[in-house]
Structure formats: C-alpha cells, structure tokens
Amino acid sequence: MTAVLAGAFLAVGSGAFFSAADPWMLPAVEATGFYLPPVPLPAGDAGTIIRTEPAPVALSAPGQPGIIPAMGTRMMYLSSDAQDAPTAVVGTYLEPAVPWTGPGERPLIAYGVGTKGQGDQCAPSKLLPALVHFQPPLDVIFEYDVVALYSLLARGMAVVVTDYHGLGTPDIHDYLNRKAQAHALLDSARAALRLPSSLNPNSPVILYGYSQGGMASAGAAELQSSYAPELNVRGSYVGGPVVDDEYFIGYNDGRPTVAPTYAWILNGIAANYPDTRPVLDAELNDIGKAILDDSQFKCAVPVGLAQAHQYTSQWTTSGQPLIAVIDQSPVLKAAFDEQRVGTLTPSTPVLIASARNDEGAPYTPIRDMAANWCGRGVPVQLESNADIPPMSGVVGTHVLAFFPSLSASQQWMTDRLAGVPAPSNCGALP
Image 1 (cartoon, rainbow, N blue to C red):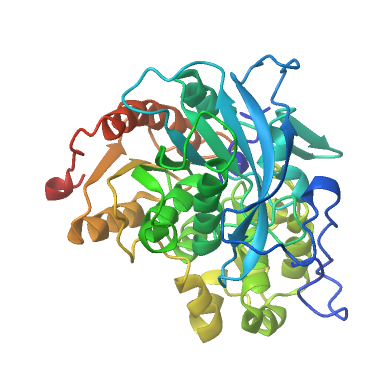
Image 2 (cartoon, rainbow, N blue to C red):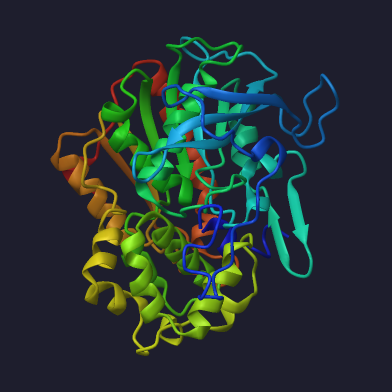
C-alpha cells in the first residue's frame, strides 16, 4: 500500500482461477529461470533452501558493497501457503559490510516490505539490483524500502527480505493474506539462518515491517510460537499495518490511489479460497472483472483502470460497494474474517507505530489490535504519531509516517537485543 500511495514520491496459480469461459481473468505470467520452482517440490521442512545464487544489490561492484552496504544472496525456500500446503518462496539475504557493535550476537532482521504490486516483476528480489522497474507505458515501481534496509545494514544488522508468496513465482501473490505473509516472513528467517554467514542457528531475530510488511510482521508475531517456535525471536516491529482487509477496503473506498489494492486482495482471495470464485464471478460486473485482470500483472502504478473506477460500487453487478457484497456472502465473509490480525497472542514484545491521521492504514483497528494483545498480557508499546496532519493523494500521511516510525524502531530493537525489559503503555493506550 505504501507504494500505491507514493507513486510520485517514489518517482491465480499458474493458470486462471476462473474457467476459460471467463475471459476477464488471464493466467499468471509464467515464471522462468531461478523463479521457477522444481516439480515436485523437494522434501523438507519449512525454511529448507531449494536453491541460491549471488544477488547483486543496487550499484554494487563485484566484491564491494554499493548503495546498500551488504553482499546479497538470493534464495528460494520452502514455505507454507494460506492453506498450509508446501510452496516455494523467494527471498534475499543481505550480509552487512560492517560489523555489529550492539549487544550480543549479530541479529537477523526478518523484513517484510511494503506494497510493491501483484505482478511478478514487482518482486523485491528483482528490484534490489536496480532499485527501479519500469514497464511501458505506466507500470513503474521504486524499491523505497532501501531507506530502511540501509539504516538496518549500516548498524551491522543482517537482513532477510521475503518476496512473499507468489511474487516472482508461478502462484498468484495473495496480497494482504495474514497466514501466507506470516509464513513467508518466518520461513525467510529459517532459511537465512541455514546459509553460510556470520549468523548461527540461534541468532536473535527481530520481525520487522511497515504497511503490508507491518501486517506481515503482526501476523508472524502471532503465529511464531506455534509455527516457528525454534526461532530466537526477541520482538516484533509492526509499522502502519493493515489489520483488517474488509475494514481497509471500506475505509478507503473512493480513494483512487488505493483502488488497485482491492483488486489484488480479491485476486488473492479467489486463488486461496475456491468457493469464493463463483460468488465473485456473479457479483463483479465487466468493469470489476477487467480491473482484477488488469491489476494482476502490475506494480503499484499511480494510474490505471482501477483508479478510473475508484468507487467499488462501480465494480459490482448490484451497484453496491464491495464491503456490502462481502457482508452478504457467507463464503466471502469467512475468507475475509480469516485475514484479521489481532485475534491471536504474540509470544514476544511488540512495538506498534501508527499515525493517528493515517489515510491508508486507519488507526482505529490498529489500536483495537493493540488492545486485544494487551488483554492477553503481551508487552505492547503503541506509538501514535499525531504530528502529521491528514493528507491524501499520492504522498499522504501513511507515506510520511514511515520515516519517524523507522527512527523510533531503532533503539527499541537494540534494547530488546540487550535484554532490557520491554516498555508497555497497555495501561493507557493512546
């Protein structure tokens, strides 16, 4: 979502998930080369590395770090999809070029990126070598997460960046899917700890993300104790997260800069929950179907078919907004309810950063998530930034809040690595 809101600032399966009689949904672009998983997938537990290759990072020379002060390794690893079935995900491990001078061993930051899009060309592992991808006429994406990556690596922290499920690989990227994102993030840490590096299997891990990455980090924090209990997770930074997909759509309905994200969510829902496909096929009109098709292969572009039809009531056969369609369909409602974060219990401390006037990831459900976690005894520190005024358009509050929240996370992480008791404002959440 960050990229969708920041276009100017930043400068289904392998086949269709509807039948061939539904021309509005085309097959996903076929993955090739490194990004094509073996068939069948190799045996192994989640986090098992399938293959690796050197990964150049922006403006690096051989043997020398470039803009990003690290040497990179691209890896394909086993993970679990939204239905807990084995799948393959790609990520990039970044070994810092500088020593770690903080407390204890060098930590690993499992980094969830913000929104890049749904097209395979938008995968972070493909953006890191070049920073910018442009596909005429208007498909452009900038790897804006490099700001945070540089900050972390310059401190000597190792970083692993997941592409998430379905970016680059044949599957459809199930955008803002709670489980798939959480699994991909946790399994990226598992895989990174198996690489030859300065880390060891018990190196401390911090889960980290903003925007889409904030939701991934939040979901991973909730699932870590049951899904990846062997990881030495010291805490989770959850920045500007989307907490509830349905709430997110309803809150932002009519904002043209955010409109493509609704299509990405629906594409992922249909790919993961087959019983929703006939419902969507009946409820979406030709415009809605064309928007889903058009958006599936694009990065976070500032203009497109979705932005030209910014109200989701324009997408439906009934003329009702999407949230009304979701609420009236038990199968759609059940699928969307599964994406809500805040219903489980993180086992480690959490820092949540949110702008009070965030127009993209609204504050109210974020505070509710914090309150739910607090009620379960989790040490939660909720940082509520009220200094950035309400702003909309290509560069809004959500984008600008990324920078102060990045700064706020640095000392919090260092303190968790040093074993300092985690702060909590659960008694008086802002």
